[in-house]
Image (cartoon, rainbow, N blue to C red; front, side, top):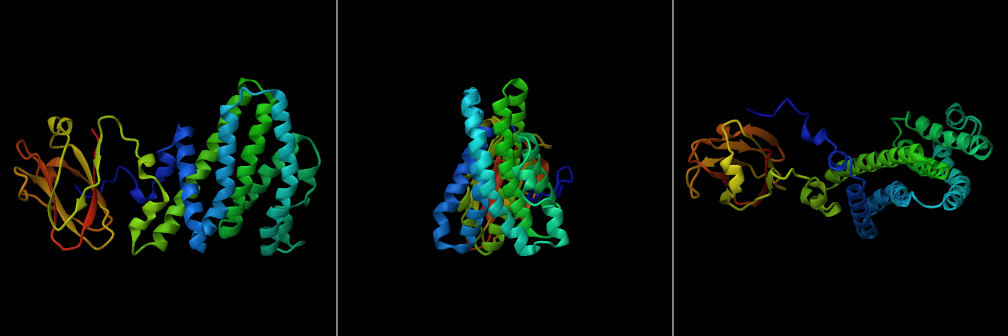
Length: 331
């Protein structure tokens, strides 16, 4: 059957986004866990400290948005105080935001004027709404500098602040429409957290490309798994020789020739293995397909040798180095 054309290459799917859609609480857990691990590991590694520092404002924005969303029934007076504090913080943030821009494009340059056409005035004068729009315009302009990672990262920071201050203004105004708008702001920040984590994954995969299991230290994998009740997923460790994947009874009862089984070689070293169904738990089956390192493939059960009576899924590691696999069956 080979690699499925139905879905894009799985490495191009942002699982941090996919697994937290419609679930702010889950993103809160994932966000807090990831940031906590960055904090823990940062002191001994400047690369991790750089990730932590860049992610901090995005993390804090989501936490604040979630906290306000949970307490959205709070008083109008408390929201007024919150918005006042945030506009005071805006002046402080401008000092921070200008730094990376001026370091890249000196004051008075054409590019600097494009980013700050009226310098600080739009952020410091006018109504709450016009000043909030100025923040939105700033992050949208920064997002256009796709060739400059520093300005893209700054744009994400500015967007995080926008989500917080716009959300606070919505809650201050009150009403069902405002609560809906606030939920939209929280959703935007959830997506931003997911995008940043996906970026971290790429950086960490490059940093630890010779020891990829180290990447697991930066996330709680259980938080990323939301299987349907009847789905089946295991991560067997493959010692040299045969490994029997124990399939749940409900999986075996409903197994068919066209049941789709995803198998991925997750081995940290070059550990190719074969997989196929057998009638016994101590030998290989009539069809054993090869799975090379890091490749995930979707196969029909019949293509792996399944037939009534062949109920043992065998993974065979012919080498001496221990590997790891992922077996997933969606019913």
